[in-house]
Figure (cartoon, one colour):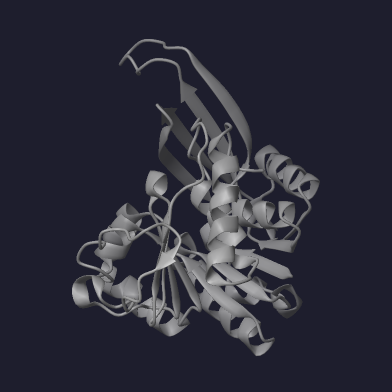
Length: 299
């Protein structure tokens, strides 16, 4: 299984608060810094699960870029893409009671241009596109070209919708048009992202975990799927897999939640390794459970 990802590779700074922030003063925290970014995370988790993983991203020629490149290599990820004068992106995740909030500076990543791609990088079985890569130019044009090149080589395309706040700022209608142009085979989304794009007015009540309900995927809210397979990431309530024929609700894997950073990326990596829909979803949930049980977004 050969999986390629395209999007951001960033320095991920995770701050796990031991007490609430005190404005104008200091509080105690445990911190970790290392490679991150949606594309990097999915590639690293896929490699840990046995795939041949490649991450296509633009990074800066700074110390942060060198650090993330070394760490991804240590995780078995082939990092390709231009190294440019400028700053590698940095994302700071503030973790409190297991939940995280992020502040991101994407650095040079969004300047990845179509003419900087090499066709050989898209020789894969699955190309996973970060939704963040669709929100800025020229990386959006590069993502569309990458999808076309990958499809010409027989690859499936998956997209993770990224943050609903960014989609709202970009414009849900514009974003939906890009999705229609990409026509992904698999679409990952949180409930907030799903609703913002009009894919569902509200998520339906979960069925018995692991049981197909026979409800058509388009039934929640009456909207149609933007992909043959939709994976609704529901956090502490597991995930829902939707197709035109069926709906599959699965409960999460029991674990102690330490840090949710990267859990959705781990789920996506596990799912994309294939098998039946239930096998893929359970593998993704197992990876997500491993991810949230420790600090950090990588395996």
